[in-house]
Amino acid sequence: GNSVTQMEGPVTLSEEAFLTINCTYTATGYPSLFWYVQYPGEGLQLLLKATKADDKGSNKGFEATYRKETTSFHLEKGSVQVSDSAVYFCALSSGGSNYKLTFGKGTLLTVNP
Amino acid sequence: DVKVTQSSRYLVKRTGEKVFLECVQDMDHENMFWYRQDPGLGLRLIYFSYDVKMKEKGDIPEGYSVSREKKERFSLILESASTNQTSMYLCASSLSGRRDTEAFFGQGTRLTVV
Image (cartoon, rainbow over all chains, first blue to last red; front, top):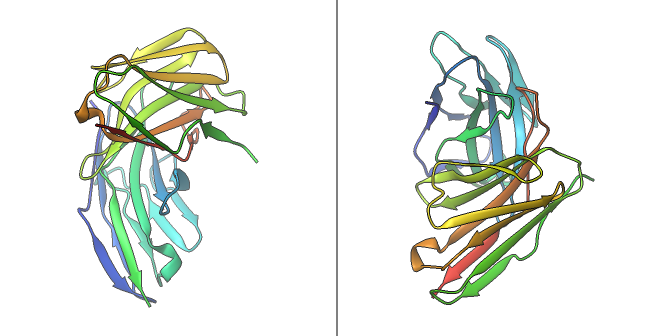
């Protein structure tokens, strides 16, 4: 079956620090990969996605590259801001026409001024 | 703005009550999902529906049922609420048939069973 393993949190950084959140996956078929973000008190929203090997998804300064050989999709940002404090979820979609999402457990990021 | 709306942000129910959580989407999406979110466990799929009156069990369906009588509405039912069903419940919807389809989420319902 499908599964997603992401870095355990919480992660605490100072403003302008470099961020990496690791994500690896196992999947049947050829999955699409996603990062979702959940700000305090809100539902999840899509941050970025990639659909094939070596694709790079990017949004709001965040990036992640689909690495098929290492089955990874690590999230990076060069300089985090206080407003990036949130829970980040790695997810994949694979198998069948309904493409259910399978999520990792989430990583809480806190950025201090 | 596209929207997934959950009927309640917070609910408190008693053990043994029948509980209905409602979700409505305005995007004409075929797929709708119910997840529960618990600390340290992430999001776990309870049920999903890919068409009106169609449903499939997710990873943790025990103690839950669902209803989808209209395309835009997907209800989660706790037949007899128990304290271990205290959780955050998230509804989502997506288009069918695309591998890269984005899921849109509601704001969540925090349910407490006492």
